Length: 332
Image 1: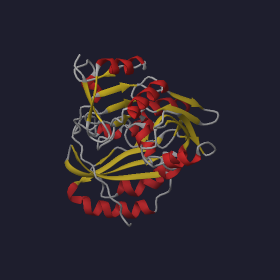
Image 2: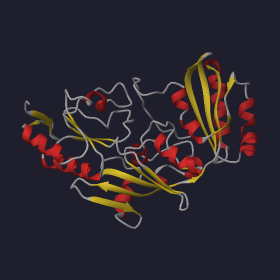
Image 3: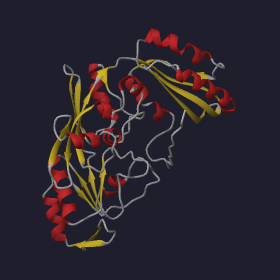
Image 4: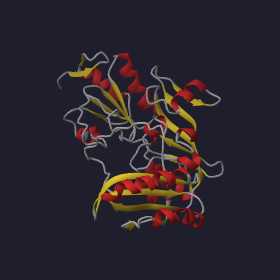
């Protein structure tokens, strides 16, 4: 085969002969993809369809040893590196052009300890994978607002979700993490071991190493009172004013998200609701919201937590769309 060009961190290309590529391939258990290989096109696709990048190599890791081998290869040759967990990064941080991708998507196992109320999950797991296992024991932790989101990127970025007002951010529930650092070492980071690295991982982003597994505190979460209420878009001003006042006085068990969307009635304003406390109490708390207007549509019901985790997908937020997201902070 022809020599392979891989981009370095300095943006130049380094040329590798077939022997060098085969040496990397022989050091891993998972597949190694490059342009033209069966599986390459699927492997380079991520959640945001607007991201269209072509890495030189994708290492589909099956375990920690594969991650170490890929990181060592990238470091030794000064290669541009991206790490793919769930692949949900809207700006496309989990894929690169011309470089090497460490792909954790095959590392998805989740092990729950219902006695200690902890769960350990590999870095390629999504919140759908995580919730499937923890909800078998009627347990959960704060995990995004879409089941397709990867646990890794969300936790390393802080991690808001439907449970965060009651149980904190995803990173607040992180007990420990196994991390392959840039020098190829596997470290455990926790409050008592490599505590400075543990501090950095909890919201500091993905540049401190490749996290191969996360250990979380999980909490009792049975059926939740969840869904959305919806009004025609022309009522957005009054609905959002109500939303502001109502949310300021809401108990910690209640999360509310205001969204502008399309619906069967046309352009709409909606408020997504998740109440994670006792159902009867939640019915009383939510009564003013459900009566306001009144709404054109009210889907709030007692459902499994996994149901609300998939709500955005049911509203059309599915992989492959062209997403453009921005964020900002408000003083109040």
